[in-house]
Structure formats: C-alpha cells, structure tokens
Length: 374
Image (tube, rainbow, N blue to C red; front, side, top):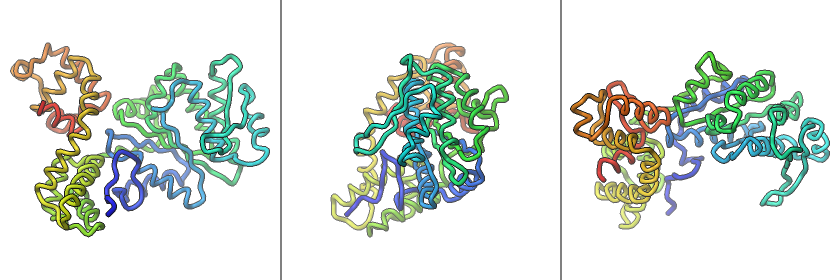
C-alpha cells in the first residue's frame, strides 16, 4: 500500500495540499502579464504551490523556467544557469545557437550535452569573470527569444540571495531595468526570508519597489488541514477520526511540511500493525519517528547561530513572550537588553523567530520542541 503523504521534496498531484484560492489568484496575475512575489516562512509549501501553478501553465501550452538561487555560487554561475534554463525552454530548435550568439555578444555560447544527453547551452566569459553587461544581456534573452506569439514565466526561488552575488543593489537595479521593458516575460520571485523580501519589494528606495503582486503565504486554516489528513488516510482505506486529525494539526502547529511528515510516519505506524484505523498511539509513534528523523537537521540549525541568538531561541522555545524584562532575562540566562534586541532583530530577519499579535515564537514547531526538550 503506497504511502499517501509526501514530504522532503516538491509535492504535486493528489498529495498536494490544494490552496485553491491563492493558486487561482497567482495564476490570474501571471496570465495578465504581471510579476508575482510569493514569500513566507520555510516549509509552508511555496515551492510546491508554484510548481502546481507552473504545471497548469505548461499543460495549457505555456513556457516556464525555474532557477533556485540556493544552487547559485557566483555571478558567473547565475548568468550561466539563467542562460541554460531559458535556452532549454525557448530555443531547443535547429539554428538557435546562431540566434543566441547574436544576442549574447559579450559571451561565447556553445551547445553541449547535459547528464541526460540532451542539448544544453553553455556560456563563457572572455576575462573569466562575468560583468554587468553579461548580466544585462542574459536577462534580456527570454524576451528576445519569445517572439510575438509566446510568453514565458520564470520562477526564481530564494530570490533574496541575489544580494550575495557581489553586485549588491546594482544587481537589483539592472534586473528591474530589464524586466520592466519585457512584455512577453513574467517573473515569480519566491523566498523564505520574509522581512528581507518585504523590504526589497515594499521600500520606495529599492529598485523592485511595487514591481510584483505580493502574496504572503501563511498557515492554511486548521479545519482544512484536518480535513486534508482525513482525506489522505481515507484514500488508502484507513480511517482517521476528525478529532484525532485536529490533534495532529496542533502537534505540528499547522505547518504544511510537518503535516505531511507526521501523516507519513503515522501511516507507517498504522501499516506496521496492519490496522485500518489511526489510533492515539500511532500518532505518538509517528511524532517520535518524525522527530528522530529531523533531529540532526534541528541540531545543525540551532548550532549555526551565534551564542546570543542560541540563548534567545532556547528562551523563547521554553517561554514565548512579548517582552524581555529583567526577570525574564534572569530566568533564561540572557544578557543585556541591547544584546537581546540585536539577537532578536537578526532572528526575525532570517525568519527563525516570528512576531505574533501577542508574543515572539519560533517559526519551526519542531525546533521549538527540540530546544524545550534538550
């Protein structure tokens, strides 16, 4: 019996937690020729959501290309990868290389074979280093290749990482100046560093100000999450009581990635005893298995922060609060107010900590559980 839950990779098809309204809204913006910013905390399903949108566009005959900035090592790497994804989508035809060579005048394009033996565009730089002119040329490539009857949607994941490519704000200015002149290309910018992206697209001093329709992806409604769990188990002829489904939602604080993970491990527990109904002990076993599988990643995430941030993370995991007065700092071994405030700003900036209406909390419920337990 196949496990009906999928996690740890992009989710699609029936296993996808269908966010019908936001998916429809994003599709309408893209169909209208505008750009989209989809941002929110990690593990909320942004990549899977955009994957579903792009699949629909492709099914309708549209062109789509994807680039993940977490895989980009340098400006040269960005230029090469961007050229490659655009070529793969728009120019896999005879004679395309001569056409592209006319557009990429400051580079030396050539065609090689990828790992699957398919044609792949490669570029090189005369000085060994990419320049702003190389960047501008490659960003102009999709519009030049589209022609009058084609459009392309380009999705760039973890877009905030462009600030690490060495050009800083200049990269943003160049890209904005190019894309605002493109009439056949729409962009989807994705990212998990919500505060950084909010500043990038909402600050009047930044090049990308008001350049995309913003969608902040939050947790889904809890009743929809519980219904999703019930339906997924039912698809494998296993009964999940709605009240127990609600308990599962609360256990993982309704984070979509962990809903899939807890569902998967709980399914394994039910199957292991050859039962046709989920029990409380199955959920408990599923949670323990999920936690064990994630523990090393949680440890690494915690240890990647400096001491002042680790202390604050542990304090908030044990006792969420809205203010860090002297008694709170003493209880949790925190240092001065200024040290706490500096650590707090940085943890909010990288989306480790979320500010709710009443207090500060860790955005990852399993990380909070780990820090409260160890």
